[in-house]
Image (cartoon, rainbow, N blue to C red; front, top):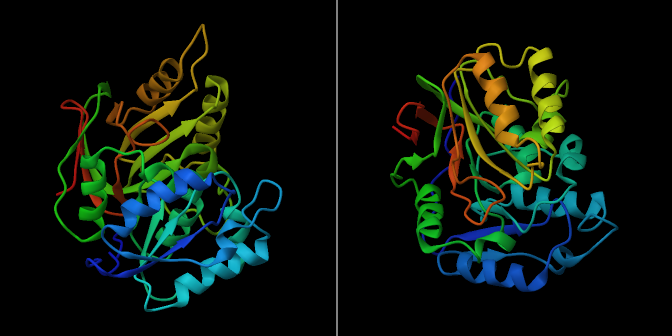
Length: 288
């Protein structure tokens, strides 16, 4: 299983900003836009700021903006303004042509999966409303990954199940990922290292989503598990880690936890579809 890396970005490239999911906070967006504009030329239309209930405009509007960004060869990448909900509503109408970088996380997981089904790599990274709040080392890693530069290994906090695993990194937000089961947009997980993170899900819901993956046979052939952050998921009597660690140990593949990936204060960028090496004993995720 291998994935094609889109052409690396260069300083000054024109890039698209789209809102395939929910409406967003304008001041946070402007701060993120300032960061992006340090390196590239962001392009968007006023339709970016539309709102339709919990969506950033109608499906037709959001889909047209995203499709235009995918089709325009002068735009070298597509960045999400925010997550929320709504990107999976666009999947049936999207057409993917030549590979280009797609960058975002959370609800953007559905678009990452669609890219991997096309054989593309993509960047699991802060959306613009989060980018302006990231420390400079995260911003530097963000640009380095997009430009094909080497990136340092990421440290985790805990070994959950010992061992070393190598394979393409797939996954993203657990809630969104499991909603793609039995659809044409979920990539084959065999031989992969699976990344999962989430926000605001009680431990029993995380358990239920994990079991959905297991009962669907999707853990068969997964070589390792990377746990990002599970923000706001703990309860008084049991935490997300209590539940997920037990499930991962039962699965029996190398697993490490506590990587700063997801909805926490720091969201380290990393390339989905890239070959990684998870050393659960050393609690590191590296990109050979």
